[in-house]
Length: 568
Image (cartoon, rainbow, N blue to C red; front, top):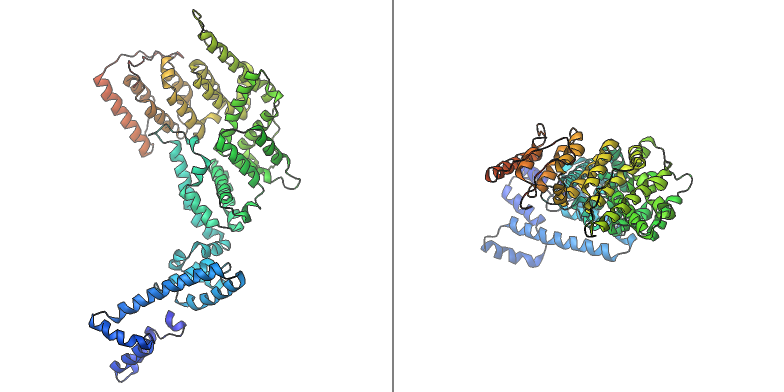
């Protein structure tokens, strides 16, 4: 039975049978046309007029169908917008029953699809047919697909997986973007949420709490499987995008919503002020007994690199304020909260992996020893800065880092993470030797400073202050000491080449050739090989034009690297 015959209209099967069994085919065709033409008396004279203009019946009928279909679709929209919920659902359900049998007809298919956009509950038999037939499923509106996905997690996963993979790929591309010095961390929350992939995920979820829960479960699983913190970013971005779209059905049921909302405001300003610090602390302290699992969600939100970045920037700013006001970190409760949030973020993976929903006990020495040590170093920086301005005064170079600070960096992941941001502060102050000492402490600690997000941050700092590093003859030493000792790590070569790309116009060609000689791109991806080859050709061409003699003392922290006559 054809689609038309299913709704009582004679179709191709009927016509074939009629022509097979009739004695006069021409008369049978004429009767068929008469019975199935548009039964409008005023139209008959016009048909002969169309014949005179050589407009055949197929073109005419097709045009009429298109016009009527579009008019009906508009009327469906009017019903959805004007009728009350009960009447709307009743009328649209009846219309779907009449239009669904012809859903395979390409001309009439949009009618049933448009109706399903507005039906909160589609009959299971229709959803089953959409799910089974690929062409129909592909053409179905997202609103109908949501009802299919709700009962088929695997199908929803198949739809979401390519989007998640593309999102992670885009984030990785931002971390390794070599054509600009723009930082990965400069993206505002609003810009991140305007990403088309985030919008698609939010549209797929709609107001459906089950699909939202499925999406979060996918993100948790992928984060546990890969340890990629970009999934934590996406978890926050989806929730905040739903918040911006006022999807209260979901936001009100997510226990991490208000915490994420408050933290998002801090990320937007790159700072956690005292008022918001108290609010965030209230959320952390307000987790009730029996709801401990919520802590893992908050930890995942805090594991977002943008959240950790904000916390660390806040900590460095608080230390500046303490130096100015001549106060100790223990005198300000905000320090403890910021450290607590950093610790939660860094422990998120372990907490979720072991299903141990408890905050790890914080080392008191972080507040009583580690932060005061950094504050002392900041005071010494200020003394050197002021002394340097005095006439006929020789400023002594910064001494090594305190042993107590080195101990904390080697024992505490939190301390090591914070030290990356202290290093940024140091190089901003043009304290190159102290910067090298901090990086050496991080190298000895382990792998904390070698995550892709922190390496991106370090590379950007070095590129921004390459003139100061070159003036201190410390570039090759830092590359050898900090980067080359971990060159076997995945993506380390790519980070190094990104650094070389950003500084290529600021260093002599022979220095670039020496740096490139330290790495191999064998087995690396196409982009890494392209960057290496391009840098090598550029350096060799520059060398042939302006040869310079360089004597490298690879053992010395102050390698004898000649400065270019022109930084550009």
